[in-house]
Image (cartoon, rainbow, N blue to C red; front, side):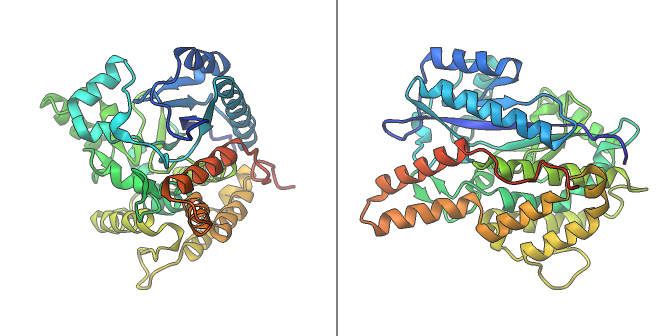
Length: 384
């Protein structure tokens, strides 16, 4: 593939009270208006008043994505700090109480709360979403089927939600466990092609199950309003380096799939079974899981699976000048994910004599710091 593969990134953030370190249930209206001013058309509301989202412009290179998101995070952080609020990027907030959160007063969100009740009220979560353009001459479902088996690896690398409701959940990505309470979330149904997918959507709309295709929230899906595949499974990443790494790997997977003579042809019901098992392992154990790789009768470590990905995607990475994505992914494997860093901070505070809430406050401080940290890795710098 010689032409740039266009993509976009959506990041979701928690608005944090810098005095209490808790989630700000109702930020001042002036603070939200100020955030809208500094991000312009890229600002988006979220289900809860305590969350906001940035939906990026269209990029053709990772360097563009890095420059934009560094600036967006900086502007939002400085804006919120003038209101004694902080910007926190992680899939769950360590000190959040979902019971006290206030819905954003827009018809779309209010309808979700009405339709899904406690499931919606508990959905206090932040994700990393990546859109990658798929050529209009290609079947997006077939391209999706080609990339789906790799999604648990990306989830493991992104995991940042070990704490839920003030305690350690035991999961690296509790967010994905909470997502399982929703219908049409997690692993997509098995579709052979776009025609089968269109028939499924038509059935759901005809029977009043959904109003529009965008009410299918799978971990990867064909976007309803853009000619893209959208990654939704991954946790929001405090370190922007990690978010850029995952976006780059997903973009590479889509590029590779688009170059195949028959993308997705090897994906089957058995592949989906393996995918579901690997997703469970990724959300429970993160990068320490033992993964099933189709065609092999032994489990793979995350390191081994990443090596397999690098062998497969190497040509695409060189063509797109993002070989450094693999060294960044190895750094995550070596140094640990956000979930592991959060647990380390918590355990250190407990050993130092802090109680649970005080230890979680230190985790919040850690996440605020990492969200403010500028990328130091060379992932967005082309290899010469």
